[in-house]
Image 1: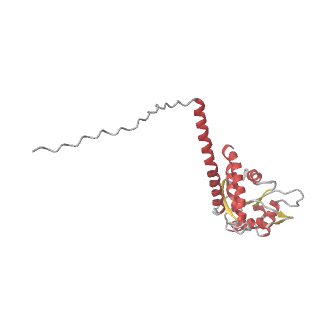
Image 2: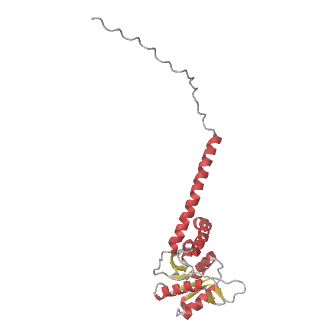
Image 3: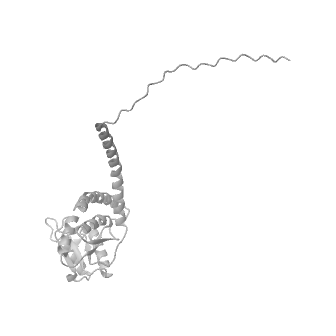
Length: 232
């Protein structure tokens, strides 16, 4: 039997011709291009670190504001605030009332009162604080005066000066909560073991808008103080 004839094979379709692009040879990085790459990476790293540093610092301020570290120490330190002709402002009175409660608990044998005065004032902040404490039963002999500080750093340096040679090594700092993280850094820079106890009845209420504005200010204050804290 004869086999049926196979159909003739179709010629393969020819693909359109495309030119092959020449090989690309990467040029080696020059010293200038390496420096540019390093600079860009450094700038990006710094740009990422700035907001992270701000957030971490703000978090530390809030942590200090809302964590009471009250314990037995060598001295309680009251940070000054406004006073009016010998009468403490509501903020200062809240700090003093809290320091008095800590004293009544027997947490320290001494209280250091701090703060100088503005031109024209009849009393220093420290004198106003001492008068309040004495009126509420603290013996005058238990009160140590830092009478000259015009800001927190000056006051803490003054505290170190008046406590020199007294055997005081640990401090319990009393202030508004937002103020404590920076103040503890300063006290530690001066060689003290420092703890913070926020005044619970301050008119600057926790988690309020007022507190937030002070937290922002304290964040800037801490960042400005860090070179002193790190390098001395």
